[in-house]
Image (cartoon, rainbow, N blue to C red; front, side):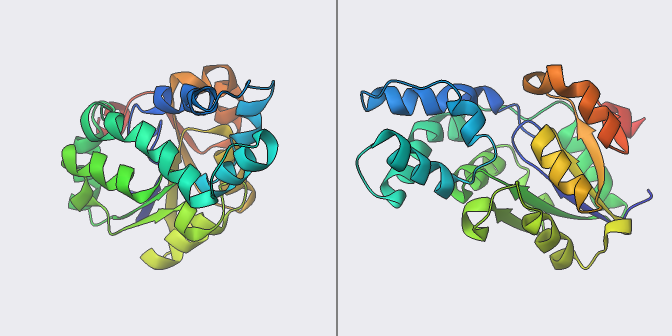
Length: 213
């Protein structure tokens, strides 16, 4: 083990949950009778939940406040997180392996806490993490490295002995530009960007089984 602290993303990294978010923005806007404009997914890809709510209010004129829009979006995703979203293969075994070797774990995610904690409790993963940082609570998305620095500092590490586990290119670019070591985790939603991801990261895996062998 060549690192002491691990900072994990959640969606697409630990959970096979990206299909939920692939269509959620469209479903939310359509539920309010709004025509989805080209580029909506790209516009919201880097945003925190608060920023996404503001975007839907300002760009599409959806009714409500920032908080009410966030609550609606989370309610649409809740059933999947609380009942169906699966953990990626070998994640429990790898997290247990890290803890057994004295590695401290944090979660840094754009998903809001009720969904995160609900899914992790159901999957018996919550106890592995020393702390959960969410972009909503932190006040910034992963277009800025703040959440990675906060997690690292909470664990008492520095970039040299901390490892970020991420699947998304934009988050990898942010963490990499800030000097973090990164293990890229393959997710089908990033298949076309995998060559770029590989070029920017220290390690690349398609399954956590590779890290257990």
